[in-house]
Amino acid sequence: MRKLCKRKLWYLFLGLIAFSFTILLLYKHEIAVTTLFSKKIKPVVNEQQNLDSHQKNFDNLNNLLKNVTIPEEVLDPNSVWFGMKYKNTYGLPLSNDAIPPFEREEKDWINFFPDLLKSRQNYHLKNPLQDSDFFTRITSKVVTRNKLRYSVGDVFVAHIQARDQLMRNKTFGGDYFRARLIRTRFGKVVDGIPCAIYDHANGTYTVKAPLLMSGDFTLEVKLLLSVEGIDRWINFTEAPTIKRSYHHALLKSNEKVVCGFHLDKFIEYNAKDLCDYSNPRTEEPWFCVRPPSGVCHPIVEHIVKVFRLDKLFLETTTTFGKFGEITGSGLKIEVTPKKEFSALGHYGTEYRGTVLPSGYFKNGRWESLQQTLPIESVASSRDCFSNKIVFFLGDSTIRQFFEAAVNTFKLTHRGLQHGIDRQAPHIAESKENNITIYYRTHGMPLELTGPASTRPYISDIIESLDFLQIGGPDVYLVLNVGVHMIHYHAFDYLHRLMGIKKAIVDHLKIHPETRFIIRGMNVVECTHEWALFRFETIMREVFKDLKDTVVLNLWDLTTIIPLADYHPKNVALDEEVRLLFSYVCNWNV
Image (cartoon, rainbow, N blue to C red):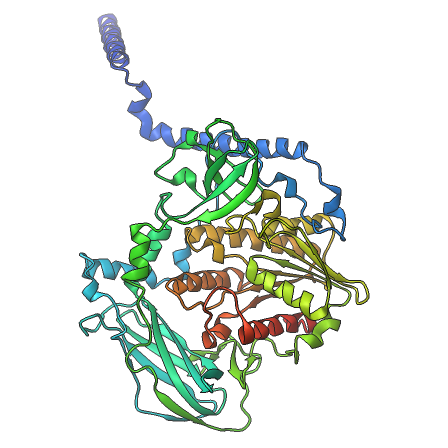
């Protein structure tokens, strides 16, 4: 027994020598011992590193706020800066190092488009060489069942067969069509009903529209972007390269640098090349290239975006962009009168196998099915604004609403003047009628030059109103964001909306009667209309379960009067403003 124990000790001794010799060899060849166990250790190390980095973010923020006092003008309701609590923190470097971005809630935007992923896969499977002869074209055809006479209350139905350049039927879906039933007078659309289009994922589509009024109508069906073009657009906006989209900024050191959402993920840069200007409160990333001085100085001014048209995007706008009405568009139908039919107040509900639109045009005016108590005119709504505070938060299309109120009600208007920067904070008021309205743009990205302090995040504004105890049934917030983000990854847009939604939910816990109105997208007849449609769909999904909040559907309205650019004009603008102001007068959510 004693010999056996000695033998075991001898084997153990030899084993220790062998293990030591192995360690010595690894060290000699500069191989870390931990690599033998890296698969087990690495996730733990990375997790700890991430936690340390995120804590560093918030520590930096706390240090930042300790040195920044809230300016008095932010607390003054008569100031253009009222409610912009964090204005002096915008443009300040969060860190002199480009530390990893925040742990953001990952929710893929593609979840809102369950059929699109499959359509893209089918495209690559069936056309691996991406032969443009197989791309969907205006050779696609509208097919009907030869029924040309209907009654009010019926549902119009037609079908689309997608075809390629050589007139061959497509066998998978994903194409972006738009359809409407219209009636013109002297070359202008006076009546119209937006159509819903259902994708059957096999190259065929169904067009449906409830016939809400009588008359002779023309069906117009346009192909705006094929599934091949949509695939290319998605690849373009998700490409991790500076060639996609970027901005400039002027630093306090008078150095000019390149900035953008996710420079930390771009192939052109690594962490040591960047400075972190992210907003920790909203976890919104914003990075700039480290200047030649090597110091991350504060941003003095954001400079208009520089957009580089790389090969990928050029192909999207040329190879995939020459579209229009498809074969069979122009079909004429007759709708005869029928008494006692009304879909008022049933927007979005199912009606005879189709979803009712938000409204329709009749005699040149928008008849909303969403707002059941519309005002007669914008001018007649002045008294509705008395004793109310209205904040307009967002891009220039929101500013158009602000300007409509200023001009219609003859308000005294004050705002910062900074060159061509119309996106600076503004205030307008009428002491006589006790009307006060404010305009603030949204945070970066924004395609107009201006000081960093004038680019607040919408969620920061909402949180600031909590701080100022501003809320209740006489406080309205009309907001939007999106157009300035279409060249970025859709996840960034989704994340921005989720942050705004959280701020709204938190505010309504304190002031449950505050009125929130989220402005939807407009139809803009251009190559990237689908990008706006994508954001419109995401926006509706994000806010659909938010009670006592209005999502202002302008997509159906501008389907009847498509815009030539992002800014509505004439009839389209007048009807959008009338619809919005109807909610200020009659909050019937």
